[in-house]
Image (tube, rainbow, N blue to C red):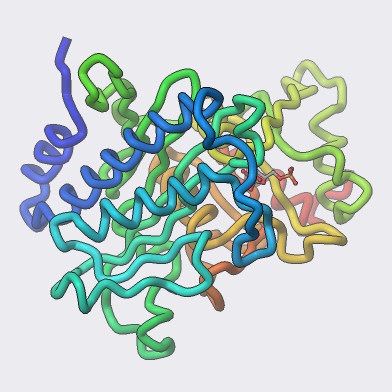
Length: 335
Ligand code: P6P
């Protein structure tokens, strides 16, 4: 059995892409190290005083879990103390991006991340995750330097997540396929376990918070009703699966197929999820795995961000399912 670690896998990928400088592999290795540390803390959360609230709120007025802050601090410390690849970083836990140009001259990359998505579920031992998006640093004439994090998703050079669940997994793409690594606690290494992940073209599951159904627009309501119709010839009804932790819902759909929706609704006109450090990285992953990601009208990766913490409706998953959902949302199907 070949024990291919993340480092080895990235070196092999670089061999086939001579333009790769190795800096990106250094950054991905740093993120993986942060994931090991965060995963260790998440897995022992019930034993030490890291559960519960800090009593503070983040920039969005949301109660902050202790593990949110621990995860954010771990990522910042490791990335800024790394091999000097990073120019600037944006985090869900910071109102503004953090520039590292004075401490680490010559950084070539920008990273946006959600340090611990789904953290409201931690006390219930539900899987949570870190989501990251890597961009190149190049001046964008339309934005000030501090807003250099605001680039469209098609500019990403790499994206991925670490899911802290029954096992800790690191899933990433750098544009040459989507690959999953499972942490071997005994070795302390992420070992390649899912090479070249391809998501099924059509799924059997849908993932949406049905508690919001009275607030959905007509297209979403009709699409979800359509999935529930009894039509065995068309492999309906679909099964409902909703964990309420984006990384967990996404990871299941990536492997098994299906569709996840967090659409806009009467109380969330822009949806709930964040474009730069949730939707964009997952959209890069799903497209490289053969799926699609839309806001119902536009390809997620082509949306021009107006703000670091911009929210966006998210329809993501198997190609057939996302295409059909968008037709309902756009009023092109009136069944
Ligand atoms: P709701 C978790 O708080 C999160 O940000 C995502 O991980 C998850 O997909 C979503 O919110 C769940 O939101 O409104 O269904 O509880």
